[in-house]
Length: 163
Image (tube, rainbow, N blue to C red; front, side, top):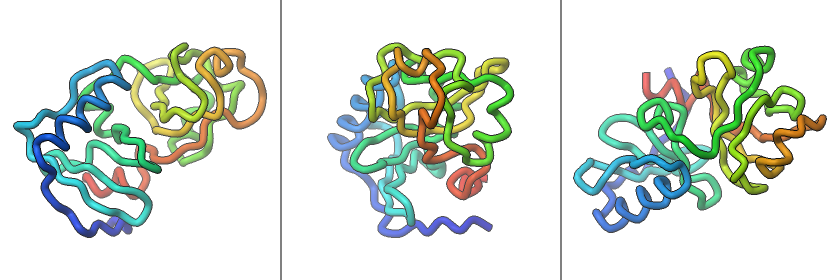
């Protein structure tokens, strides 16, 4: 059973859906849900969530929309990625923040404070989403310390809500 509380779920208007999907598409470089999809916005215990049909495929964190790990699996974005080495995978999938030395690649267009998605180097599978405290260029320098604050990861309560 998941411990995420969802309340005030309501259907979004088509112009709201269009605006949200254009924002996500501009950020991630791939088309996401459209006006013809049934898209609902709801409040959860941690942030607002976006349902597309029965699945939570996006979240709104401090006013910034971003795909969930499930949304990334479905839409396969080509931007805002950070690739970590296999040694970092067990930590990231347990909700740990991403440290600079574990990063092997990153989208050079990432700005400080951007929401990003984290993938492993071997399978390119999305592991988590988080907020970057460095630019894309700085992430690739592998400097020590925390580089990305994890917000949601495969296996957390938001992930389990969709199972």
